Image (cartoon, rainbow, N blue to C red; front, side, top):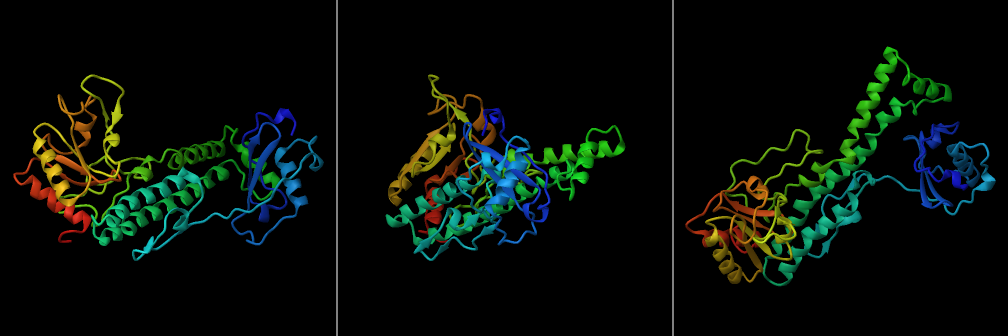
Length: 381
């Protein structure tokens, strides 16, 4: 391709005479400057699945998308043509007994909208790995593995729906700019309205503004990533009274909470002699159960060490606050922990909250033994 196309990154094209088959848009992305490009075309929703255009038709469509009369099909060499089918599929269960466990694309398939694919797969593995490890080591009952499907399948179903809805959410943009018109004249007329000082122009511009604004649900959707709430035997909820409500828009906004089954909230910490800042997330994980407490919480730390030794599991505990193990420099943790200074938050090896206590208890060792035995399947369920 001539170098004058060097600034081309994404080209949208209206439909041609092949509209029922080709759909209404085509996209172009550069692979190698400035000689190799990736074109992809989306067929109309009613196009036959078996539709397989000839190479001649593909070349004609590429030339049309480029829109430069000096470029012909003779200037273009096709390296490969392949089909990609958009999926909206999630498995009903992620494991069969204790013999077969599936994750990633094997149990949830969707388009790359929202960028939810790889991280959902990694989360599946992160959820499952520590459970298998403890069961294989004889430190947890095999029943712990039943929590895998219970916790991760709802997440997969949510991600499937969100990714595909994110794709559908772009439809109003194409409507607003007139790209869905069946004829060139209709598309040109709709496009021209965007520049009109008429009521029609005002309505079309407002439609476009709202459509673009709504794509934040695909581009800035922190909530769909972070509002995962596990509700299984691998979390301890017996001491909770009220489940926190989700934000008004749970796709966009993240509800920061230490409610059991939620992600451990991030908070910036530092050492007494300030160095490089790090997160509460850095304290947790690493195949260990982690307990976070504050002033007056030393009995929790001593109790966890004792109970961890009894159960044969790896544990670690930290005091966060003025003069403790780590400094809550910006008071982030104080605002987000939702427990008192002498309370505690117990975190699973996958950095999800297992249980919390609002304050110090007289029988903190007994309580931790009950909680951990429940989670590991070694006590009453």
